[in-house]
Length: 498
Image 1: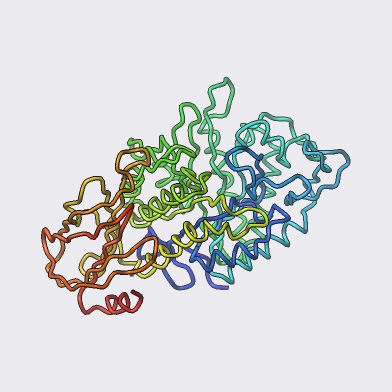
Image 2: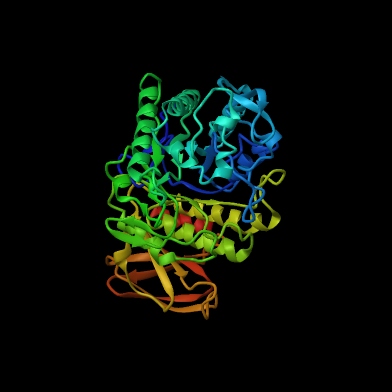
């Protein structure tokens, strides 16, 4: 097996995978592909590969409740269809009406599906973020968890759900760490795996005696140590992804420590309001709000750019329940903004459910095809040398936000997005005007690229330098201007794909 995916040694904001630089991008199902028996993940992975998706995310234990926002998620299986890492042996019934778990007995069906999923993803060049544990959020969701005392025969303590992310209960922690060691050992042979410690860890609920952020972070540190210690005696060592615990009340999602001295290699941040870095708060978008919040997203990515860990904007949910062109357009614009600002991007595609593993006809034509265009576009760059280049943009038409990316004197893209929210006057109406760029004195071949069609306009050779003014064609929502030094092989390649 090749060495597992790693942070690129020459550009720490991208990955190296099978000898090539890689950006992570996906519109993924909601993480239950292995745990949900009817989900035909072969169809899902085939389509993801065909659409240029480079990432998928996989929960190994967490199970959710159906709700009004997303009733059919693969992470919300019907009780008879839930495949846990442990056998259901009884005696007695768990809170979901099925036999109780024996935590001492691994479930062969789960691990067979896990290996089949990882193998198929590997064959298709898709990286899998394997998530070991998760926040459980409330009593009703904790009631579904195999580690809940009522759901197993192993005499674990009865606890309040926030305490499952702490070191307070030795027997529970022992079981969690046994799960971590088992999964980490099972997946060690795969080069297409990143290990995430815990989905959305949080502390600091206002009620007396609730776990603090520091307690949750101490627990996360033990999880990370366990992963490292387990892999130390195995052939391969994988990247660990995650985030420091957020503060529940008032909600603050901290990230400075995660980028610096927290025991993870990849920073996974879920784009939410109250995300802070270096003392500055960024409103990255309210959950299921159908907002855009594009400027804050760009500014957060750029603010963290000099940190030595990749930033993955994991599980963007700002508009994912809205399975329509407006919601998908928001996520297209956020994905382009993230990638051209030096980050990676994952949106949950709620059109993917059991028996509909490739999405709907509408999501295929829109979101999933748009992400294919973006993946092909960003991977056409020299990613090792490419960086966000905000300094080159000196003038824009009103209501536009710009993200410049590439190698300034040879291959540069400027992504232009209408940053107006859907309910603002003029949002989505045609944009015209000039783009002003400060460039080296070179002749460039200039062409426009459509994020929706994936097509280039004919290229025009232009002499550029300081305060170069480029007239923009009329467009709606977003447009990319690509400039390649005249005569470069990159320009010839672009013309061949136009």
